Image 1 (tube, rainbow, N blue to C red):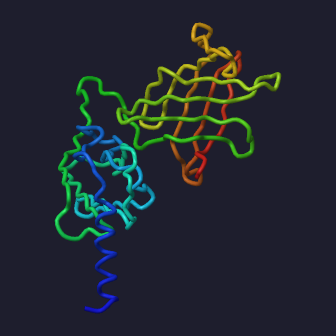
Image 2 (image 1 turned 120 degrees about the vertical axis):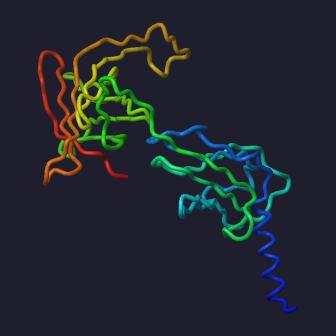
Length: 252
């Protein structure tokens, strides 16, 4: 047997051992996903032998294959660490995850996990309109750099927002958009709350000094017209004035 063949076999064994860090059984987060949920495969791994940047996920015929490129095993072992591996936001259907302890999806997987994504439960009596897509992101007006709107939408189509602006004195001010509801698949309304509280640089943070005041209303219209793809209209009523801004999601 040539030295080159021996070296190749040694590297292959080392690559396999590198992914053979002690792990707990693979689980799914959330355990029973519905459409629109962000689905993750969760492992408890050796923090030294499991570099996240070497993990690869592929999908074919509703089967996810998780592999990791080679890495020399550590001695002594690292501390246990929980690793969430994103599978995606999935349509309803049956899926399978295969975990391979090596850089290639070859042979029998070390672990498998089957799961089903179900349609989110709804009601047939006066059903609420649901959005067409996920509008999560940081939105702004490129011509008015310095303020922005951060939106987060969950799997149940609920959304909250944080609006960071400057007041008439040039001081930073925060509002939250709460209690929102969809009045159409592209139109969302909410109440604006202004929050005050103690400085984060204080020696001790006193939560009793935090106050939230209803201050106005907000409406976001995500409907897109030809030539205006990716834009939304943000209308807010604040301080007796109603203003509309055209905003777009910051790409990054």
